[in-house]
Image (cartoon, rainbow, N blue to C red):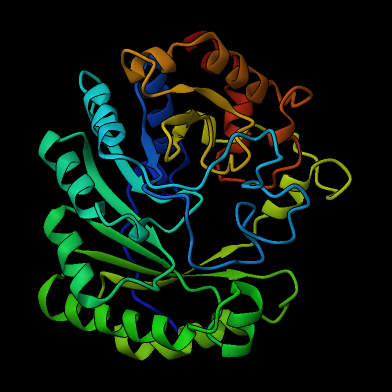
Length: 347
């Protein structure tokens, strides 16, 4: 059994137990042509090569960043001008519930990350801001800097704690460094920042049926965080990201129910391209580019987004290959399908 860790309060709009509240958030967003959450990709570079990452894994047959691909994905940091454009074009919309900083790369590789967060904070575009990181660069000093800029939540994707497993699946022998970073962050938050949330993330791996790694992670950090309700170990199911990226025939999964993502959280890539979903590493769900639209509200009202959302509500993924084999799921899929006619009328 995994050791018990403190429970962190989850906002209603993303709490899997509060399906009615999640649906209400979507209804309100559609009615106001607004966005619940947004992912910004500070960098598409990464210092790891996770075997389960569709952007950087060698398991993806058509590498996303290979110059011969037609996916138009390039490695790079988001420029100050592009991020300022995002902040400017969020103005006039209701405040985001959450602004995430992650994507297909490691956000802390962008040396201007704290400046970006500070700019968003000053513009008051989001109720909360979250940084999702692999932890290699998240020293206690960097944590303090990002908190000072305005970050409310940190999620560290640890995934493995056994050195051999970590190196095998994440490509670099650095788990000890990441563990020390997390421990230093726990110490700082516990003593100085009880309102800042830290989530140590791991997964239930298909090839780890006994959940050995999650149990080891929980056993290691559990005693350290027992007195800190703002810090927890969070375990989620493995996503078939690699199989989805490799296309038909790579996975037996066939989506039949609507996904919450198109109604909840879009992503802006490091080059300004806007995707309907944050899992769109190959840019198959592009809506526009932030530099060419007058405001984000224009994208939210676009015919393309409206069409794709209707396809999801009807459970028809014939013309959405990026979604057809994706097994990302949520607790409100059935409710979205049951309420599809009401939701379609709001589009």
